[in-house]
Every structure is written in structure tokens, then in C-alpha cells.
Image (cartoon, rainbow, N blue to C red; front, side, top):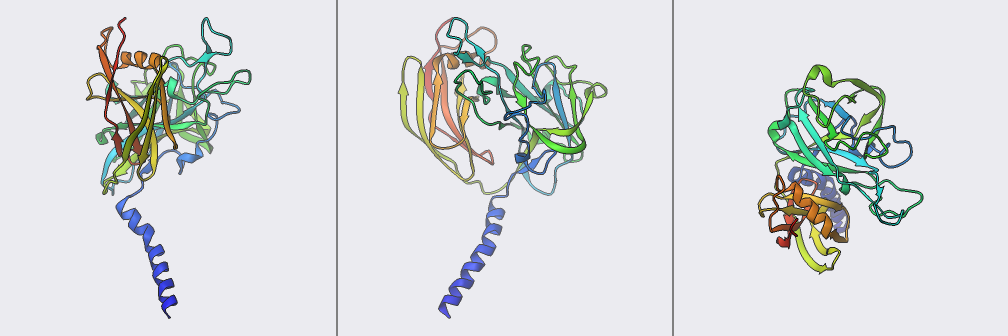
Length: 339
């Protein structure tokens, strides 16, 4: 009898346990042209790339239906799945020494297929994307395509109609698949609510009548919106375990813990107030991060306008979970060498 009671109790617990988890931690809502963000597994990992490059002369556009408005959403993100960034030989080095040139990827969100400057958001530096393999050289940074997200004001989401996403590059050198990263795609049947505009010049279309140039079919771009409903947020924890410095750069070891951990990444700031993520994120433990001195020095240009450089900048390491909750280490100062 007692054993039967225990079995019934256990069954009751497992039956209701998912409901409790969902009530306390509603899953993020992902809006894309496919039911799951995992379905965008074409082009950006390997094989035929479909010429789906992200460049200054190409804007990929999707139209997404209005999200469910029956939830108390408190955060919004726009994102893209990308990979296969190209590398180039380094001048003056052995031919097998290659690097990725800095280039910037932007995304836009608007309620129509026309984007104002205030609708555009910096997404990622090409140096931080997975690198395309090379059969003749051993390259670091090679890996599968990944989703990259940028938080936007919740007011940018149109809960009463369509939301149009666009992705492009402001770097003029990105004009074909031999130099640019590749946007992931998913297989669809027939025409998709997606378009490619090859007439842009480093900015998204500003006139709706000119935006939707070529309707896409058979494949849908890996662009999405992620919405976070209000809930009792679980804390994210991070602790610095080890730090080393050498003439080439820096090495950090941290421990991070939380529910549905998403990534651990470096952040940089000119004033200790406004922070910008940079460097290739670490998605799985162990959380070891390295960064060269040269990359840190170059990143200063994204912090301070013009040619003015601060005497020092600040770095920290931040861990994030799927909901966008985060925790950071104490910041540390790094001297900026003069021009």
C-alpha cells in the first residue's frame, strides 16, 4: 500500500512539474518563417552557399506576422543565424597565416518594408563569426553557424500587424560570397514572405515601394524575433577563477551558472557605463576566453567617435541566459597605446 502511495505521488509530481516550470519561467517566443529556429541549417554550415552572402550591396528581408499579444512581454531581440566568414592571407606573413578583416553587420526592424536610421541596430563584427574552413590551411575560429541577437526596445515590436526584418553590412568591401559571411536558410515550399534587395548601398531600403525587389522561394532566411515574457527571473552567476597576461594578449577563466545558459562573452567600455560585446562568444563550458592586445586596441574605434582615444578602456566578462538575464565580473582597466 505504501509503495503504491509513493508511486502515485511520484506520478503526480512529474505530471505537474512541467506546468510549474512553465508558470515560473515561460519560454521565450521565437518568431521566424519556420516553427523552430533550429530548422535554419542550410548554406551557413557548409556545402553549396546559394550565394546567400550578407554584404553592403544586399539586404535580406523577411515579413513576420504580429506576435501573440496575450503575454506580458518585457524584452525583445532581433537576430540572425550566420556563419562561414571568409579569411584572407596576412600581408608579410606565411601564406597559411590568415585573418578575418573587421566588418560590421546590422539589422533593422520596422512595421513596413522601409527603415529609418532609428530602425537600424548594430548586430556583430565579422571577426566574431564562425570562419569558413579552408582545405589547404589550419584555421582557428571554424565552427557551425550561430544565432546572434541584439536587444531592441519593446516599443519596436508591432503587436498589431507585420514586422519586417532586414540584415545587411555597412562594410563596402563585402560585395560577394568570396569575402562575406553567409546567412543561414531553411527549406520551404513555394514562395516565402521574404525578399532579397541587391540595390542597397550599405543601408536598408528607405522606400517601401523599392524594398521588396526579388521574392524568395524554396528557401527562407534565418532572421527572427525573440520575445521575453515577464516572470520571476532566475539569477545568473559568474565568478573569475583565473587570469593571465602575456605580450600577445589575455586569458580569462570564469565559472558561470544559471538556467538555460546561452553564452559567455567579453564586453568593452570607454567609460564603464555603456558596454559593447566583442570577441567570439563561448557557448559551452569550460568558459575560457582569450583576446589579443591588437583586437582590444582596434575595438576602441567602435567606442569613441573620430580619432580621439581615451587613455584607458574597461573590459569585463558577462554571462547570459536564454531570457537575456546576465551577470558580469568586476571590470578591469586596460591601457590604450597612443596613435
